[in-house]
Image (cartoon, rainbow, N blue to C red; front, side, top):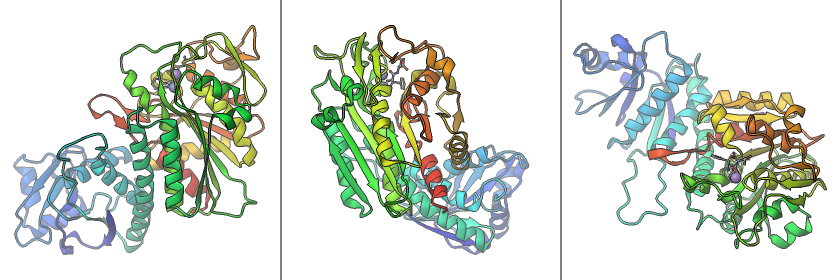
Length: 497
Ligand code: BES
Ligand code: MN
Ligand code: ZN
């Protein structure tokens, strides 16, 4: 997609489709009023006749306009005037861009963020427009045969803003948004790919391919022998039940001198989670192909980091394997020694994410990071706590947590700070090992976070539990690309951009 930005009257800009906001009760936004005047009352008549109510996210496409600068006019409802907030505006933007993508227009201009700087700063108006376009146009067809649905016709998407300065900022935001959505697309493609194709080796090859495509990136892939040599007994124990060899993937982005401490991102890469011997029940088990979404999101983030040429060092560490039951699989009660030297009694083989992450976190320390952020579809309990809306954020550093929360708020890819600590850790008591991999059911997300905290002592660290936010179920089943927008916003900030 080619983005451009404009300031000035909507009545003066030629376009295949003008996308304008209309409030309830016929209250027109500035751009709508300009086009209403140019069309001698077309929009106000549609409101008066009851054909358009201005309800939030309602859309109406008007065709065959004569003597107008736009071939098509797309009205988008903004709800009651004076009640417009960030959330309603973002939803209207998504609805408007999605409706525009269904038209035959080869170019369009969205005026939906015109004069709304108080709700969404122009830079973010640009980013959110780019993200809206991505949501409207992303398709995953890798496993489909036959005629593929036609891609949207729009080639150029403009953002109409109130001032030259706002237009410049929005364009910069859209360009950042383009990199972010390319990162999201990679995340979604990897996560949506079926687990018989997207194996640990496949993920590793994709990481190597990504590194070949970008000069700032290098990828290193380790296999079972190296994982054993590193004494990653916890990671190894999860991979025991499967025929698929485990992979430890390290991707590095060099954007600053080597003397500068990197941000290390760790992503859970379980390419399929059956639960192991603690087998999961059949309903929706297919969705456990998404259990590598943490890995996919850090790989996608590395793509965006490289595209944006961020002047910082970033390292992605991805432990990847399948969690399967078999004659060789780890059994409940088995005790393993993690890379840190701490022993773990595996009471439930379905609590495997923390087992591969704890060794990856120990490994991550060798990069002497400024901070480690792990991303994982870690617990069903997090889905119960926060639903599909918010990512669970835990950690040992309040300032880092605040920065991540703020990045989530700015991008709409939001997280919620949850507690960890001694009370939760104590539920992990084991009679036989240093601790168990499972505590009580109650507070499961926080217990998992507390488990990880034992491997990040003395290190600035945050944990993002994306079990609820990484993918959608039901008819819209698929990866969302979250939390790539949050992570990139955090990293842009870190880079002082
Ligand atoms: N991958 C799952 C977590 C999950 C479950 C994510 C449902 C999204 C939807 C994880 O490996 C898991 O199975 N966790 C267990 C932990 C429990 C055994 C302590 C869980 O949440 O039930
Ligand atoms: Mn599991
Ligand atoms: Zn899992």
